[in-house]
Image 1: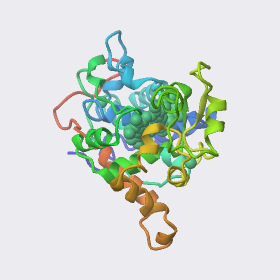
Image 2 (image 1 turned 45 degrees about the horizontal axis):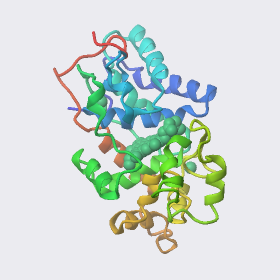
Image 3 (image 1 turned 180 degrees about the vertical axis):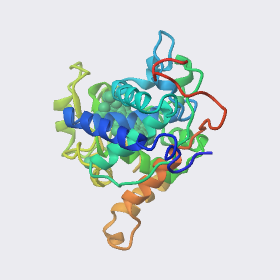
Image 4 (image 1 turned 30 degrees about the vertical axis):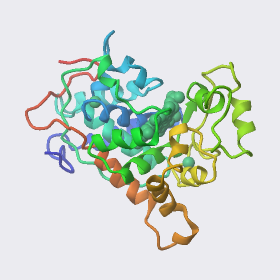
Length: 300
Ligand code: HEM
Ligand SMILES: [Ca+2]
Ligand SMILES: [Ca+2]
């Protein structure tokens, strides 16, 4: 069972150590908050939140196509090294990832929330296990299903997608939306006022490694601007744009940003935090399952 303050007696400084490592890493590289938040999602969606993505090796999960661009491993390893010297063999890598994601959200101006801990580290990590990661080009129904299969709700799906309020995407993920929707055309849901900007940043046959904000003009701030951008046709990622093409997901977006709901509507930050807690519980290993790794990149 996961619990709040799972390490309060076995490693009282655990949360503080993770927070300070995350804070330093974000200070050194402003992109790091987004990177750490994404890392937790990619861990939880493959074999549950068990640190499987952290394992190093030729056939390890981290090299899967579905994990393209995932980073932040060094930050987790730095926190782990400090935790090992403070209280050896106690704090799991999976929990470090979950705590780091929470700290990353708070540092970006998002909700401050607690996460339960007590996750154990998994014993397997294979490239093929990540075949099922959601992809930007999938239909809204496929995307919904992938979240539902993980025990999450459609509301969780929308809220968690709004994590794209921070961070960037490589032009690599924009090609389909801009030039192949189908053949030679662009996604008609892109606001005509935004299309030239996207095309200029990610030209056809240009450098696919160029990066652009996933939440236009608000890539470092955890706010609801992503939902407004989605509503207004300024979504960047194809999967985010699709949230406004489906009645069910559209109504979730609207519930947060419709002027009609001003003051009386639900609270985006609080609900996002709740969905993060839900995601953090996917297929967790507890008790005697798995292990507590000594280093996050290798099994004991
Ligand atoms: C519908 C499911 C999702 C799809 C298809 C998707 C896809 C993507 C893609 C293609 C990128 C750009 C990666 C790169 O170029 O490095 C990205 C970035 C990101 N994603 Fe998602 N994502 C999804 C859901 C989520 C969820 C649930 C979270 C977290 C709760 C999340 C957090 C992030 C963050 C923070 C970034 C920015 C990373 C950075 O700046 O390096 N995403 N996502
Ligand atoms: Ca995992
Ligand atoms: Ca933002």
